[in-house]
Image 1: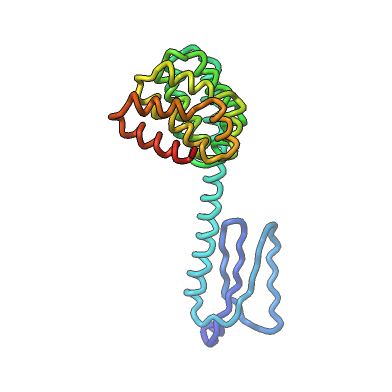
Image 2: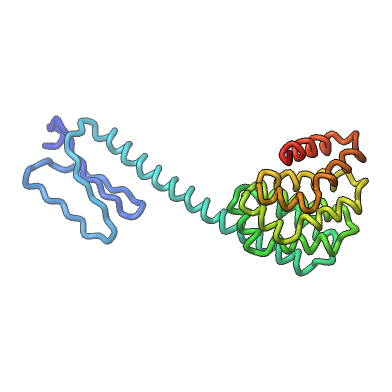
Length: 244
């Protein structure tokens, strides 16, 4: 009854874990409030004329905290889940390196997981570049496997430019060139190969390495043999412009 007659309402607010406790208190100068509970945060607030508004704001704050914790936990779990998928895919590709269908589908799934430099780094750390280059050597007569592997290498370079030099050191330039020469009539492979060279053409050191292998001549020859393939002409033109 005395509290109702007060112009200003006082609230004792306690957050215990995720539970919110609110108690109306009399704002006396000698007021001492003690809650003997572990991991408890208490706050006494004076001067709110509308206790219900204050309670609503407090409840919304707790709700926002819970939602943020859920989002952060989801991001962390999603990251760990993606890394696990990458490890499993690379392991499968290594264990079943002679299976054409497994190689093709595995590389496609691996490429679809690359959304940022984090996924690209995870693939490299798990031995992805070596797995891709070995598959291109083993399945040199299978243009679809080659196209998927080359496209994945290009996606790694696009996601993180610092990985370009690692693909060069792994000998991928010569492997991709050999695939282009062997399957000059396979438009998809030609497009993916030129796209891979274009992804490297923004790095000066990689450009010098490609010049050593004369990739410019290979790209021009591919454009000459596929004059009606718009994608090949577009990719090749951009690559040549970068190499000038």
